[in-house]
Every structure is written in C-alpha cells, then in structure tokens.
Image (tube, rainbow, N blue to C red; front, top):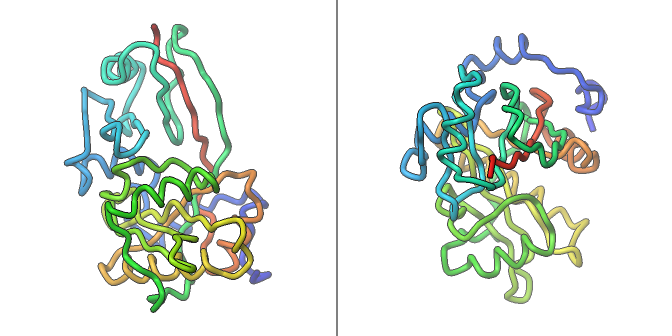
Length: 248
C-alpha cells in the first residue's frame, strides 16, 4: 500500500478535498436515493420522501436528502408493517415505535488511482448465470445480491474448469458514478488476485462511459479496505448501514 495514501483505518474523512476534486461527489452522500431518481428509476418504488428498489432487485431503501421526521410515515407505508428496512448514511431519528435491529459501520471508497483494464478471461454474466452467482454469493457473503440484481449493471466473472469462481459488477448508479459490488472469490481460489482483476475490469467499463467508480465495505473488513486502498481507492467518508423494523 502506498505509504503516502491515508488509510481508512485512520478515520480521516476529507469532504472538502473531495468536493474540490470531484464536484459531483455530493450525490454519494445519498447514493440509493440518487440512483432511484436517476438511471435506476425503472426499479424504483416511491412514496413521498421514501424510496426503495423493487424487492427482487435490491434490498435497499432511502430517504430524501432533505428528509425530516415526516419521512418515516412515508417509509412505513412503502415497506408495510413489521418489515426490515435497510438504510445507508445519516437519517433523522426514527419514531419510538420503530425498532433498530442492527447498525454496521462502513466506509465509502472512491477510485482515485486505480489501474483499470479489461481482463481477457472475464466473461459478461447473464441471467442464465444467476443460479451460479447466487450460489457463489451464498458461500462468500460479499453483501446483498438478489435474483434481479444483475439487471442493475454489467457483471463480470471468471471461470475455472467451467465453474464460476469469482465475480464483480455494477450496482448503484448515481449520476456520474457507478458502484462496484458483489466482489467475491471462491474460498478455494483466494490469494490469486482474481477479485482485483475483476475490479480493474469493471472499472474499465465504468471509465469508458466517462464515469467514476466507488464502492462500500464494512469498516470491520480491514483486509478488504487495505486491498482496495493498495490498488487505488481512497476513503471518501465513513457511513453506517442501519436496519430498522417498521411498526407492526
């Protein structure tokens, strides 16, 4: 890892510097909302100041950037009673009849120096590959991936002896940016750089559209964070992944 690049472990958020270098980066403060009101609008369900992806596409909900207490009834109506709701980032305090199920610290990283390049061995995955993709996700736990998540963007995979052993792809798509997600490798083949190759390849496609890559990771996954930093990602901000249960 470049010793001159501050580590996400240092907890150094640098919003002013990022705002100077990346004037459109403010959409990354509310990436789910921005995506659902942009290129992913066809997957959106919206009530007032609450929005979500269709439930077979992605499990994410969002509140409007200017949401206050009035947004929680919209969110309850959108989700239904007794339903788990996943939100990312800062949210107004929930009403007392909402249950906070869990909170997970996370980081948001932005590509600043990645050597993006297509990979000649990477294949574009299609809906026919979804059963294998779901199996790989179940064994590696990279984060949420549902039967129609593949429709959010391009997913690439690497095969070994015919079996899918690594994948990565595009998920959230706020204006000017694309999130790299579902980065995972079969445990038996880790340590060979397969995930890094796919991240570079996915990023190459993102850059070809004139966009910039970003990604999220658990703050506890320090090995993954160090890897991403070592190949050219930089911490933009710390965030929180929260799961609530709507009133029943």
